[in-house]
Image (cartoon, rainbow over all chains, first blue to last red; front, side, top):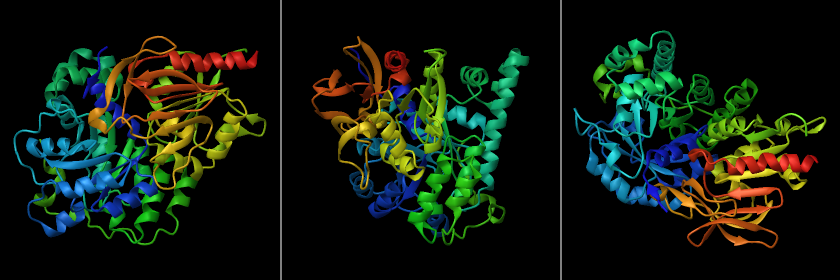
Length: 298
Length: 200
């Protein structure tokens, strides 16, 4: 009898089980409990939410293992944690701590400006950010089992998230059309996307990524979450949007509700009522280029 | 029974897509269930069977209650509507749940006790082969639960090592693993067959 751990099927399988769900950034066990009570499918354990990383500056690194362990002990839902881009030792530590998913994240300061982590060499699955299809396929080639469009974390401005999910969706549709009309042009499509040909072919024929696609970066309201879902996301990450708002428990539950029935305006309207103040946020247009996190990763 | 059976697939959160494709591949019509009205109409129950997919059981429980699907689902299955629950679906069908999330409820239809995430965290998730009363199976366990108590009248269909991981009580089947991820169709076929038996 053969038993296999850490196979692509098992890694992608957990992401499948997160479909239609909301993954929430939390910085304390108490916040993790609030997220679980509100119906989060997973929590992202970190020391500072992106809005604070942005405000405080400095180098952002993997969280203290004590914090991650305390959050794992507190909740029964999956716990994710972030490693810096290319920092495979932080990833080794997170795997040792038995987190359920590692986010190789541009929200932290990159550790390697050339190479991402070789994610095939781990048993624990990885989620990675992408702003376009080529970037998503490069991460999948490295072993990512889940993709999230990046958006612009810590802003509460959903415009970059919209741009990235639309870009990925449009590029998939273009490949799909090419597979039917001119399959001999897929070679050049792979060159232009800077992505492996076999993955380009797979996407072209399936009309979808081979892994689950969530969105992240700027989602702050139930309607934002539903917008991402209507644009084709399988689920959403909400970072600063919940615990930087006036009533985190109510807002978290409302975003879960709107994500589950994202195509029903009556449900979204009901979910949007009486939530108090949303996070104040900053407009991405006001961010000077060096402070745009989405541009990290290659 | 004329025509193909209609299966209501609880579609609030989780691994819905693979179940839909598998059921459609077997000739069933699939209706997503997101509210009580999707399941029960003016003329009664709209479907011939229901499937509760994997996902996050604490999330699905909240959504079932939020959208008034919990009670109609419980009543319909209790009244004999054939049901299959996989992973989180097994947790939701169970009478008792160990280490439930605060406030988490279950439908209480299968006389078993289930322990969530009993086989470890994601690094312990695995593809494996199992012997079962339905023959050999190749399936995936993803942060899987186990059955820790089996009530009278409940048949054990499969074990993994010493742990009970598949059970049946009448027309209700609960399994701790994911046959839909590995293309294992026997449970879905049995669900559709139980519709034919019921209607005779």
